[in-house]
Image (tube, rainbow, N blue to C red):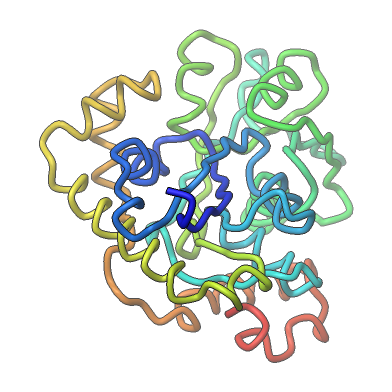
Length: 285
C-alpha cells in the first residue's frame, strides 16, 4: 500500500463529479497503484485555482474559462483533458422581490471569487444584454450559500450558478430564477500542476482514462439518475433532464479546437491581454 502514488484532487461537490466519487469509493484507482484524495471545493473554480497555486491540490476538475484565464495569467498548471464537453447551464438568479433583471446603471453580481466561473460568466451575460463592463459591480461571497444569502439580504441583484444545484433554493423561495446563460464552450476540464504533471504524466493519463471509463458506464446505467438524485438532493425528473443535456468526455478530443472559443471570449471581453493570449495553445496544454 505504501508504494501507492498519492494525489490530491479537488472538484465542486455537485452531480458533475459523480464519476470521480464512484470510482474513488469503489477503489478503482488502486488497480493502477494510485491513492486519490478528493476534496470538495464549495468555492468553485476560484478556490481550485488557489489550491493549484499553493500546492494544496495536484489535480483539479474546474471550469474551462476560469483555469484558461488563470494559466494565461501565470498559474503554473496545464489543462490535460476535457471532462464535460457539453455547455454549463448557468441559472440567472435574482431576489424574490425582483421580477427580472433590473435595468439600472449598475448590476451587482454575487460571485464566489474573482476569476471564478460566476465572475467570468457575468461578462457573457453582460455581452448578451449589451451592458457596459463599467456598469458591473461584484460582491465576493465564497460559494452558493453566500450567493443566495446576498440575494436575500439585498447585497446583490444577480447571482449566476449552475441551475440544477440551485434548484432546491428556488423551490423553497430563497430566490427567483429568471433565465439561463450557457457557456459557449465545453464547460469542465481537468488541470494539473506543472511540477506534478512533469513527474507523473503517464499515471495521470491512466487516471483520466479510468474516469472516462467510469463516466461511460454511468451514462448507460439505468440506476444512475436515481443514485445522483439521492446523493445530491435533487428530484429524479431533474436529474434525468440534466443527464439528457450533459455529456461527460469519454473520447479523445482536440483540445485546441475545443478551447479556442474560450480564449477568444476572454480576449474579446478584455479579461486577458493580447500579450497573454499570444501562443495560448502552447501555454494551456
